[in-house]
Image (cartoon, rainbow, N blue to C red; front, side, top):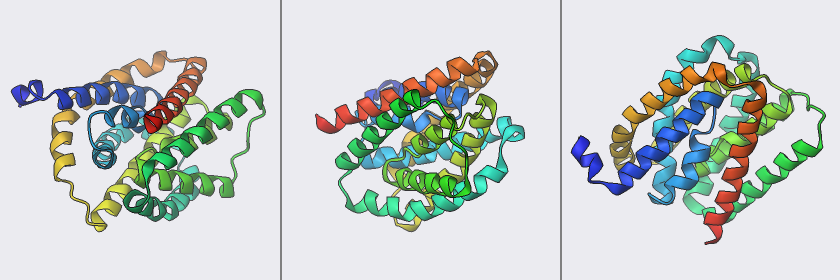
Length: 247
């Protein structure tokens, strides 16, 4: 197995990307797909990237949820998941029938707009059931169309002033459930998982190591640093997504 990895440049690149992305995910509760998606597009076909990330995320988040279960806001998750279930079929239609370049640019522009609005508009937004369902729907659409379900939820929670422990735990719980829904949606749609499963088997051991490292480092990350990481990650993702869509 080890010799197979060393002889495959694409797989080595994917392992490195997934390793760094998993450390960020374990520190913040999100970031795996956000960081991995634009970088893995340089390694694999765009359609395969979505499925590979779905499979990796399902396994990693299922393990991770046991580390954070005490701090999960289950009451908040209910309307979020209702919206997500509505959004998944829409995202699946986009995945199979719509060109992704335009969608990626639109997502990136929305992310950048909200990031800078959050810097200008310092008042916290109030979490309401309807808002939460809308955010869940947007996240569900993005999950099955691009594998990047995180930005709407992260922006929403960050602008509502959630502390880092609650934000991290609640995001992990949400992504765990959403990724199971995503895998099921692809299965019911007849997607072939063979290639994605083969790559995931090689990548996962390195992700588990990164998950352990990130969880050990989390207590040393201050709330201020946590917020800065969120801003920089989302900004990087948006700018890089636009760049890769235009070249």
